[in-house]
Length: 294
Image (tube, rainbow, N blue to C red; front, side, top):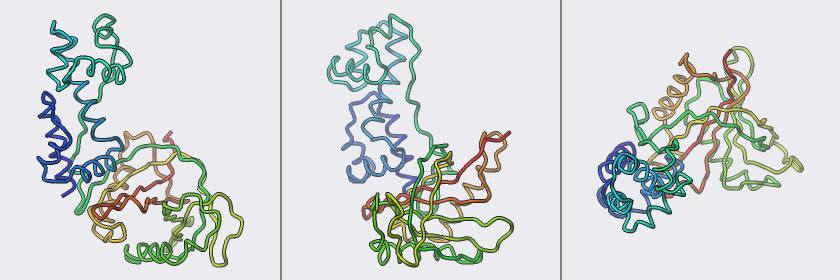
């Protein structure tokens, strides 16, 4: 359902670039509330819907601005701007020069292309995005470790995460980001038949770690970052969803043209912003350290 909504929305935006289509009208055309649509778009693409629509209109307007003798007022009206000054101000914020200067200087301008969604992004109850290569800062976290035999069901980490979040996290001192859950998986070297899964929370320092808990440092490093948007509570991630997520991650590591590869030892972690679940969808980020291929 999420995949269908986003595909329809992106198509609708492209179809209405010449119209002054409001966000309310876009949401009405998809039979979805404006608030939900804006949250879903921001969680999926990490920019606001209104900014993306404006950037697409401005980028599309370059064709008529630079390849015709139309007045700037007419170009503005063609792309849904009620006043030429509104178009000029938005254009300058987007491209750092005015429409008139763009015509005179012939400067190369960086445009916002249409966002593409592909069938490979679609999961049963959500959408998978990525990877992006990001640099994460050093993260200090404290949690409760669990030995996870490799034949355990994928729902087991979700249950341990829930138990930690409800019963254990408030025992930890110096919590830095109380809304962010960190699920840290450590991979023993060799062919071990288990992993160590530690439901955790970020802290400012390791003073006063409670008995039965442990401290872990995630080093500052390059990571492949995937993110998943699901139409359910994050605790309801099931076997099928998890398998498709790991399949997508595994596919990334097998593409020879990609500059980076995943480490197959050490650790990886997921991050969930608990307030991100608004009763309709959840967002989960998955990070794995990478190294540059030689």
